[in-house]
Image (cartoon, rainbow, N blue to C red; front, side, top):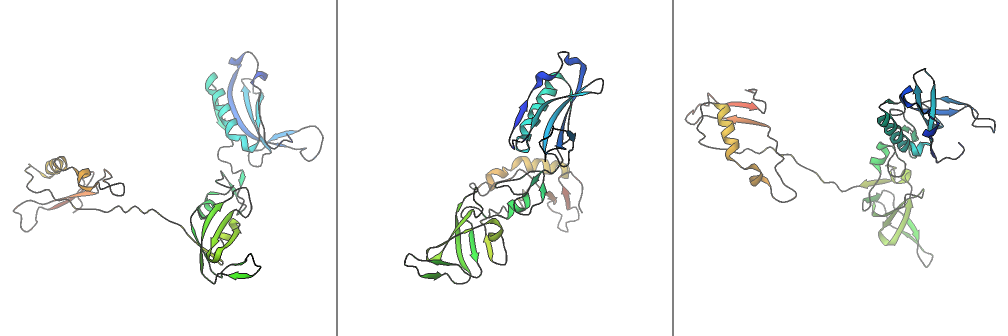
Length: 276
């Protein structure tokens, strides 16, 4: 278990009489003697495991370990355990599924999963993208080929030109006057030094009124049904990739022609409930 990256599958350890087993369990495991060279002594520990094991439980209450894996191979171990259970129609329980094992490189908080360069979801969302604009509040300084210092000035605007995930200072940012700097995630997300300006695609869901006049019907429900059938909303609103009818309606308003005081005007939700 000294190898930090491993997955070992040995289903051959199960008895030939597979009908005597009833369940597959996936647990976190900790070696009580992991700091020494003595014999391995393992205990189930789903919260702070050193590795993970698949246990196949016998009807008599005993169990057999038939697979082990390190944290980075846990998804593969899960897939093996599920296939084993499905193949033999055994029940399956994964006791690791809702545990937080990964540690975010940025905030050091345990997370259920990590993204990108080993970040929790919160820190991953803060990082800039390739092409994001970076504003250096106090400016940046660099040496020229002639050995002279060049200062960009405060509030200099740079652009993320490269992201090198294998390096600590993984963001290469090019500022004016050919000043190029490498910043770590902690540095570039420091709001006291930098502002990150990302590009966003904003979708505006606007409510548009479409009036269908002269619908002859015995009541409001029938009038709504006939009005919907008579109008091609997709043809009205679809205008290229940036504008389209979503297929959803928010509600209806029904007037009666000739009802000048709007006495019989009613508002309806999609489910037919009268609003007013």
